[in-house]
Length: 248
Image (cartoon, rainbow, N blue to C red; front, side, top):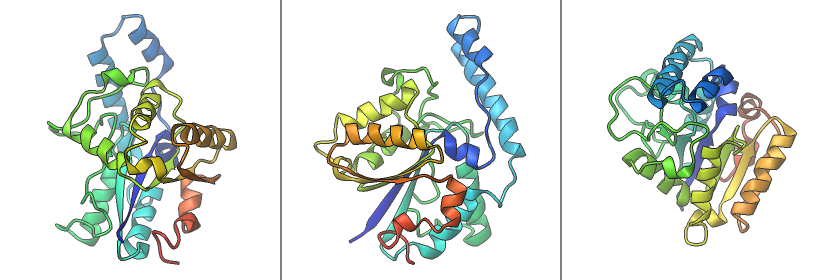
């Protein structure tokens, strides 16, 4: 039976890959006070993040190491689906770099989404993406989320997942809480209600808090807590996914 794994990467994953940038509080205050328009605020974030992404070295990130392990250790019937709540496109960049270095012109066998990383909250990736998820701010409620092809695909992938790896997410901001609420509304009727969640988080308090939120939203689901940073967990071989997804 095919075994698909859905990966959801939050801000902690970006930090682990060398991108600790956050929106300055002054910018948030200006937006809330009406001194800066929303479109201008989004453009400021986009320009700042693009500058920071360029500074992150290529080929040596934890993401790149993870892709190497996926390529060599994924079981024959296993596939990975990559989602992120982050605005940056570090993971997409590393996926495309991996393809270019290993199988130019071909989608990796281990990714069931071909070479696509789905962005739930929009992305600063350069290019004209007509079907991209709308840019969601940390203070946005779930009602702001518009239906687009990418957003719908990402939500559908999550709803039909039986194995979900959550990396570096606390579900503290409004938009992430809204995502959980959307998933919870359907949990009785789709596989995610009985899924196995593997939660990777180096901060013990955040780990327990995230586990509790998922347990509340999906009471029939299972959970494994991994109190490690992403790079450390990848270096360990991600044993919590052996043998269900990875070979020993």
